[in-house]
Every structure is written in structure tokens, then in C-alpha cells.
Image 1: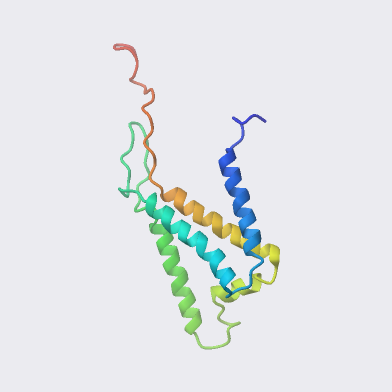
Image 2: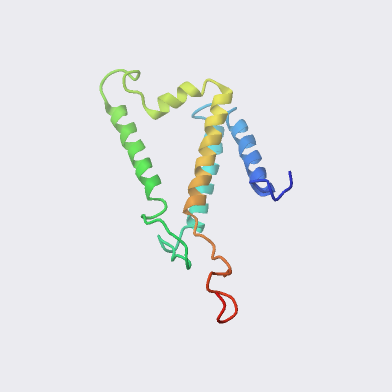
Length: 158
């Protein structure tokens, strides 16, 4: 398979390998310890920095000639709504009367997964990938160099 046929470049593969190695290392930590807090805080800080640096100046870029642009809101709006819903559910379950088994919080469900090293590493890796997707989808598109259009070419030739 040539490098032109491969869907990912060496940079993407290196980032995936680094993320997998980081997740395997993070899975060795115990919950609520400073090493666990540190390996969790580093990607969060990186996500915030990358989101701010790559934050679009305009919520909707101007379409190029002939380009179809989906209408919508700000690129991070769906993630903010999802986060708000998760926090609201977590708080509602936390303050509900009854046993924790009858009203599980996200953290109590995560604790059930933390018992298994590989599952913990996979969830952490998925969390890293989700953060990368957030930054990638919300990043401002770089301007494309002008390419040939249907009307370009020598005058009088279409």
C-alpha cells in the first residue's frame, strides 16, 4: 500500500500511538490521587489551549464559490449542550433520595469500569479522542488556495 492510499499520515498515526500509550499509562493510576489528577489535567489544559488558539473568529466561515456550507450555530454549541445535560443529570442523581445503586452518577458508573485495567485504558483513550475531535471540528478552516473553477480558463472558453 503506497502512502497515497493510506487514509492517515504519519503525524496522525504518531498522535494515535502517543494517545494510546498515554491512556495505558493513565490507566495505571488510582482514582482521586495526585498522579491521576495530573494525567487527567494535562489533556484538559491542552484541550482548552488548543480550543482557544484554534477558536474560529467567525461562527460561520464564508463559503467559497460553489461550496455548500451547512447552516448551524457555533461549532462548540452541541458540546456545550451535551456537557450541560451531563452535569444536570449528575447533580439530579447525586441529590436524589435513595441508594446510590438506584440513582447512579456518572462517576459511580466510571468507578465500576475502573476495576479493569484495559477497560479503563480504552475509556481514557476514547476520552482523549473525543477531545481531539472537539478541537478538530471546531477549528477554523484554513483558507484554501484558489483552484480551477468551471468558469476559469482562457477567455471565451467554458
